[in-house]
Image (cartoon, rainbow, N blue to C red; front, side, top):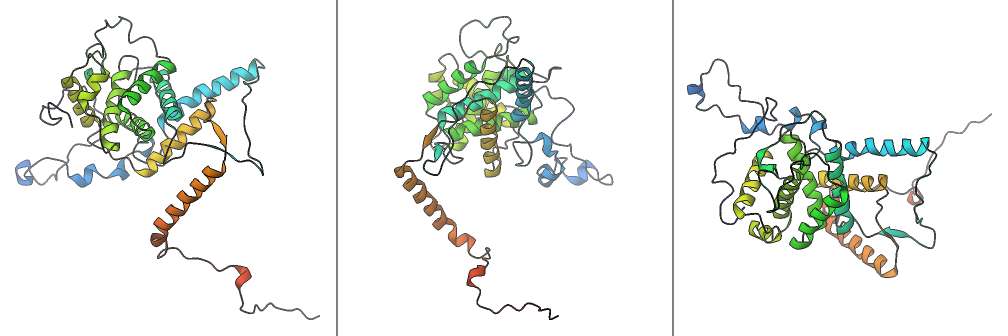
Length: 341
């Protein structure tokens, strides 16, 4: 998936993994020796048995598992509300628009076509909460993501680079720069967040001030290749980040894939869950999507899209869907018991 070097030719990276691995080791039958079995590799059916995995810790795989960023943000939201209540400070007045019989207000963001600007803002806010509310005990830090070992620029890394949490605006500017230069879509931003949380879950690491830029860069790099038909090459990112080499980008992509165990699948149900959780995050942090009155032209456009989707899936629904007759169209006589006193 790289340019000058393949992402699979290099030897496996030396990762500092602890004893808790997502994949269990192979356990052959006690009556058979290793020579009798022919190999000691784990069977693919055992590796892909998702029923044995704890859904609570795999939100990027299962639609029913709650997203990590939303749970991390709820602590700060509760603290803000508590502080406002104690200090008797009403929350800032927000110019809310409500629909009426004559006017309908809609935002221009849908699950299939999200608003690019506000989606990037929400993703940056989710990353901010990941960094701010990370595990206080600290988890292992992989060398490939350490900005001190692999700097993104020639500027000297400050000695306290791993002490200060970045602000949300700093994260937003970094993500926006990559998306603007590479001309990526809003859907790619949502997939980026899915891969980021999948990395934190699979590799059992935390995102912190020392590694957040390279983790986000690796997630964007992979998401752009998986989502977009005409993906951005690794050498193109080297034109955006002038001081990074193609070899470094290839190694970052390769190790990112290995940490994801090459699981780059994003089900539509998981994608939709992340989209609506990002909207919930925006609502809780007063980052509402802009509302505009529904115009006649947009109403006709929405109606055309709805009709197109209805015609597209009409043949699929017909064999399985059972329609019930309306009570107004019933012509059969109805008998009811009569009580004669």
